[in-house]
Image (tube, rainbow, N blue to C red; front, side, top):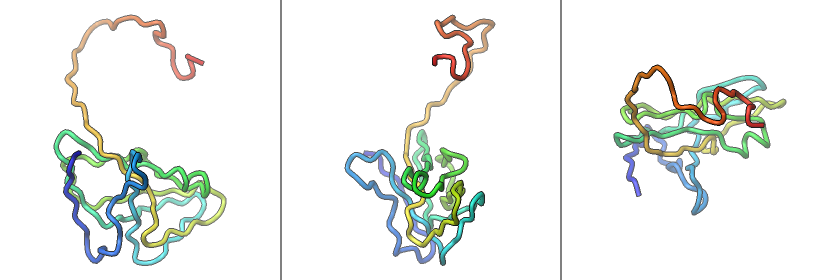
Length: 146
């Protein structure tokens, strides 16, 4: 198991730390650290604070992703998804939410607004060549395989 250092900001001791909601969850739910309710109008996007900073170990990243329940029930999702938190970032984790639904959506303090997954990162070096190996698919683009 990977250990990640985390720090609460301000007076956010009432908020849960990122939490796996079931024993086999891939992502941890993260929570809104709002002072009051925020209304997200249809088509509107807002940057929502979580009240935490994390220290991701070198060679890893955290990905911020939508919660499927918010998306299917309310049309609320994460913009710029997955959002990447690099291992050298030390600021507050914030989530860009957008309301793609038809009704205003109210975000309250402590609401589960997104999920976060910590994953290894592969680093690459480029090998510049004149040709690439052929495959059955070749240059077939979007939708090419059916």
